[in-house]
Every structure is written in C-alpha cells, then in structure tokens.
Length: 236
Image (cartoon, rainbow, N blue to C red):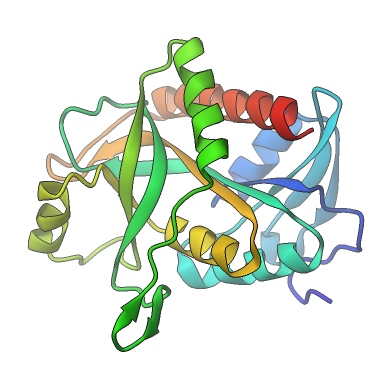
C-alpha cells in the first residue's frame, strides 16, 4: 500500500488531475469539484476526490520535479488511477506564445533527468494518449482558447540550466519547459495508463517576463474547467 498518499482503495477516482502546487490543488478542488473530500494531507501533498458533471474526479498534488512526481504516480497507480492529467504552468521558449496561452504536450524532451534512459543506448520517448489530447484540443478550440499542441521539455533544474541547451531545444520547435511531464508519460507507458499534460504559459524563458498572478490564475482556471469538462464527458 502507498506510504505517502494516505488513502484507501476506492478513495481515489479513475480520473486524476495533477497540479504541482499543493495550494493550487486545494483551490481547484474547492472551486471546481462538488462535495470535495480530502483523502490525504501527508507532507501537504493534498489529494481530494469530488465530482464534476456527476463524475468522480481526484485532484492530487505532485510537488515539484520528477522524483516527487514519480512517487505520487506510483502510489496513484496502486490506488487504481487510470487517467492522469497534469494541469500546471510553464515557461515558453518562443515569443509566438502569449501569456496565459494553453499548451497541450504531445511529448516531452528532458534536461538533466534520466527518467527515460532505459539502457545506455536506449532512450524511451513516450507520448501522450492521442485520443485524450485530441479531445482536449477540440474542446479548447470550441471554447476559442488560444491553444498550441507540440513537444515540451521537462527539466530537473528550475535555476542553472545552460541557456544554450534550452535554445537548442527551442531551435527544434520545443514549445516550453516545465518539471514533471516526462515522469507522467513514462509512468503511463510503464503501466498502460492514459496521460496528458495541459499547461498555461506563465513566463517567457529568454525574455524573463512573467505574467501577473491574476492573469496566470485566470488562465489556469479556464484551462482546468476545460480539462474537467472534457474528461468527465469522454471518460465518465
């Protein structure tokens, strides 16, 4: 049984949204879910289960970075989770993306993490679940949300990544950088789960311009409601 997610079988839904920030998990659960119930608060890695459109959904904090996320995902699998969707923020690698634009990640390159290194000469590159990201994309378009689909990068470093490494990725069309998605897609591939990442642009990496908190919050709110509405209608 899980050590860090203090929950029993049946307390975690098949569909789980994965914000990194514990306060954002609490906010999302209280704002968007009907009758949310806290099933774990160990180390403030808050997890809630409630309903949206009458369908059970959980919202589970992952914390920052691949190691923390990996622990949460393994334990969510033990508890029966089947559809994993990261909802978070990212730093854009192109000025063509505006603040609060939505990115749906087809796949994730890695910087500084060996999560996808299976052997010396084998690197796994697991993608998102196609059906899931197509449904999310169609919903975003229908709602006239500015949405972009493509590759992102997962980095072990919030500070200290050599700029030339990030610029190389940008030159190959990588849209943005964050810290968790590669672990989510890796775990989904390992266990045959559905996975997707949907992000709101909070920063521009090269110009070092950050959106104000209100604009980020509005973008995250709209993104979260779109994700919840889509997955509960398709998989509920």
